[in-house]
Image (cartoon, rainbow over all chains, first blue to last red):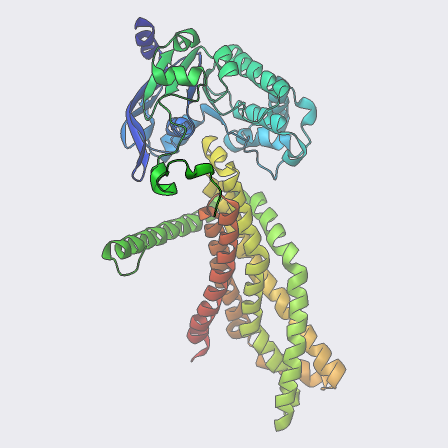
Length: 282
Length: 260
C-alpha cells in the first residue's frame, strides 16, 4: 500500500515496534503506526485496548518497554525530564473530562500555561486568552468557575487551554464521550477547524464511529495489542479483516467476544440435565 | 497474599522499600524547592492563608480550654505545697514546651492535613495533575512545594497563637476565677521561662512537626489511588500517620532538648 508508505515518510509522530504493558498484562505488542503532519488521525478500537496508552506514550507520561516513540524524529522514551518538558510545550492534550483546574476560573485555566511558561505582560495574556476562548465560543464565560459550566463547555475550555501555547500536535482523549448531539457536532467542527486553521496535527482517540469517520483524514483501528487496519475512512470501511468489520459495522458477533474470559458455563452452573431446566420443584 | 510464603514476603518488603525510597526522594525534592517556592511567594502565601488562617479558630479555642484545664489541675497540686504562686510558670512551661506544639500539630493534621491530602488526591483523580504535566508544568513544583512550605510556615505560627491563648486561659482560671496573685502569676512566669531554652525549643518542635505533618499530608495525597475510596483512605492515613509521627518525634525531641 503506497498510501501508507507515504504516510510514514511525512509523519510527525511515529511508533516503531512498541511494546508496553502493566505488570504481566501486555497492552501493546510490537505496534507500529504513523501520524501524518497536518492531518486528523483517529485511533479507534475496543475499550481497554490501549488507545489512551498510546497518547500517554506520545506525551511521555509512560515509557515504552520496547521500541521507539518518535515525535518530530526524537525518541520521547529516551528524553530526560528537561527535554520531555520542552517537547510537551509543543503538544496539547485534551483529557476525557477536560481535567480543568477546579480552583481556578475559566480565564485562569486558559491563562495557566501562558503564565507558567512566559513572562508576557498581563494585558497581552488577557488578549491571548480571550482570543483562544473566542475560538471555542466561550469568551463570555471567562469569569465562571469549572463547577458552573456544563460538560461540553468544560471540554471546550480545556480545548482553549490546550491550544494556548500554539502547539503543533494536539491529542484528544475521547472528545465526544457523554456529549449531547449539539455539543458533539460543535466539538467535531472545532477539531476540524483548529486543525486546518492553525496547521496542527491532530490525534483523536474515540469510540464514536459516525462522527470520527466523518472527521478524520486517517483512521487506525487497534486489534488486540496491534494495528488491525490503517488508512482513509473509506479504505478502513471497505476492509475485509473480520475484526475491523466487526468494529466498523458494530456487530455483536465476531473476533471480539461478548463474554469476558472465565470458567466455562458448565463449571459455574453445573451440567445441564436434560429437560429439568424449566421444571417445577417437588 | 500470605505472610509465610517467601515470595510474597519478598514482594511486600520490596514494594515497601520502593515506597520509602520514593517518599524520601520526594522529601528531598521538596526541601530543595525551598528557594524556588520563595521566589514565587504568592503561591506560598495563599497556602499559609488557607492552612493557617482557617485553622485559627479551632487552634485558639483549643488553646483556651487547654489553658483552663492546666490552671485547674496545676492549682490543685501546687496549693498542696503552698506554691500556688508558681501557677503561671507551670502553665506556661507546660504549654510552651509540650502541649502547645503537640496539640497544635495534632489539630493541624486533622484540620489542614486532611484538606491537603483530599485536595491533592482529588486533583489526581480528576487528571488535573496529568493535565499539568502535559502542559510541561511540574506538579511537584507548582502544587506540592507551595503547599508543603505553606504548611511548614503556618505550623509554628499557629503553635505560638495556641501558647498565647493558653496562657490567657490559665490566667483567666488561675487569677480571675481562683484568685491567685496576679503579680506572682506573671512575675514567676517572667523569671522562670527562658526565651531560647523554652520558647525557642518549642518553636523548633513545632517547626519539625510542621514539616512532618505537611509532608505526610502532601505525600498521601500524591500517592492516593485516583478513586473515591483511595482518597478517603489516604485522608485517614494522613491523620493516623501524622499523629503518630508527632507523638513519636515529640518524645525524641524532648529527650534531646530537656534531658540535660
